[in-house]
Amino acid sequence: MVNVKIYVSHRIDQDNEVVKNEVFVPVRCGAQYDEHTSPEMQGDDSGDNISEYRMNLGELTVQYWAWKNTDSDYYGLCHYRRYLSFSDYQFPVDEKNQVIENRLDNQTIEKYGLNDVEKITRVVSNYDIVVPPYADISKMYTPNGPQPSVYQHFCAYDHFLVNKEDLDNLIIVITRLYPHLCKSMHEYLSGKKFLGYNCYIMKKELFRELCEIEYNVITELKKSNCIDLKNRTSIQQRTYGFICEWIFGIFVYHLEKMNYSICRKQLVFFNNCSTYKDECADSDTIPLVFSTNRYLLPFTQTALISALENKSEYTDYCAIVFHSELNGSEILETKNFFLNKYQCTVKFININDIRLESDTIFDEKSVVVLLPWILEKHDKVIYLHSDVIINEDLSKLYCESYFPIISAPIDPILNGQCMKNRSFNDELRTKLGISAEQPIYSTNMMILNLEKMRFGYYELIKEGLIKKYSPKEIINSVFGKEIFMLSARWNECISMNRDTEILLEYLPKMYSDQLDHHGIFHYVGYPKPCNRPFDIKTAAFWSYARQSPGYESLVVHAVMSNIPSNPPVEDKQKTPLKYKLCPVGSVRYEMALKIINLLRR
Image (cartoon, rainbow, N blue to C red; front, side, top):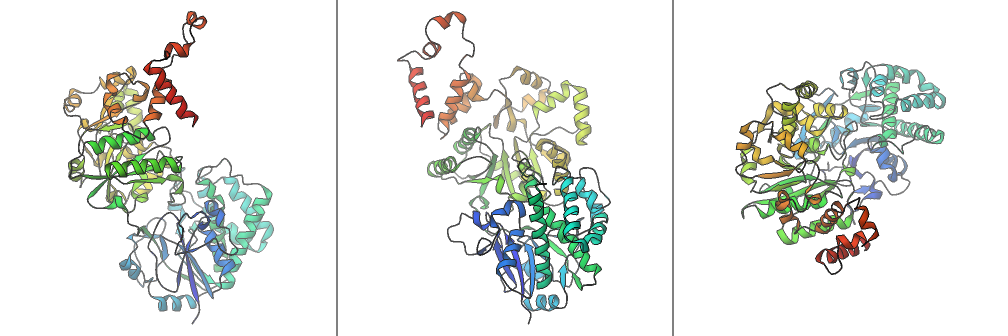
């Protein structure tokens, strides 16, 4: 019997389902960066390896490891969430010619024949190569609309996914190094048949030929310095991965022309592959989701404290916090504080470690619209901005919002601006494609039914991201008609800016009538409560902020925000300004000393 090995690229930051048999070999991609002390799964960092280039090459570091360190009659590559189907049935597909499956589990492993080692081996041994069917790239979205060819499709993503010059440079290098591929390359790139995702099984000699071509082309491109990744976005850091995907498609197309025997098997994409036990995924625990940064972390802590202080004894919360810049000590301090004082689990997720489809463009601001595909273990969450104070138990609201896809209050500021400025209103509604009757909803507090959001909305959301719409614009554009309107008291805007306050005056009386019971305060815009510590409007904020681990940081902001930048001229010749603001021996002087000592640590 021939020896078939399919190497499955797995993420190091997630615990995902594994197909357990002798054909599939799970390998940790980028294992060099794995922080697990004793991982059970094979890594791509042993022997001859390029594990360090995970961010640039993705699953191809696993392919390289298999090439240099293993021996089989047939080599295959797939991803933890993409597998070739060995079922005898043909399943419905999306516009990328993928079968979309909800979960990877024992049932679906059997459904797609992934557990039938004998059948997989028998099918594979009859062919030179097994790959998915081509997808019609002319049916796929781009920022400039559908394009008629592979080349034009990726040119339409110029400076989004890759740069147009990257594709042109690839053509030049392949023409010089592999002239026998030149004709096939031009036919493939000028046609609409596209083969992506690097999922395949092929004979050893073909596998090694593909690896050698990809390695040599990437080496030549690096030598020529024609691709500079320094100033590119996180998604563009994977430019070399895209280049290898193009080479893969060209290579298979060439083999087809050379009359190699090719078997086409459907490619299955699994929405949820996770196996890990997430404390926040407990059915009795309500997940509160935040996005934060170093400046906002004390606000996030304060918001969470307010939620915990105002919940009933029968309600359990956990927090999921997205960030991109917090260090280990900040994370550990926050986790320990909430676990020790409130028995509340806080889970931090660095957005730089999130991997979605290769053509999904996102940053820390757009995390909220991608939560269904990031938080695969969750069916429903409450998303909150960090600058809120929660005055009531959210459990009843959470349980009652089971059926709507999204529940959210209106955005009083944006609706007020629309009522004040008719041309702004018309322009915004035209841009988002929403009717004059539809209110504009807030994203400061939303109950998101992630399970329902996962089906039929991904491409629309991705389109909004490519157009550089804000998360609020995407939510209103994609889901507006299906959003269930919550009372305005769940987004009671508090502003210390007169221009913003004026906008609230344009709202109908119905809005103010809903504010009898204060559900959530939202400190909208600037200045923030830490910039106005003596304003009566910030009293609720400071009552919780004093308990937070980041209280000292908020005090620093308060002091710095209230030091006059231009003291009176006559004072310059008298007592130094610092002693006028903080007289020696005063409470203010002692507080300033503490802050200075804290900053010097």
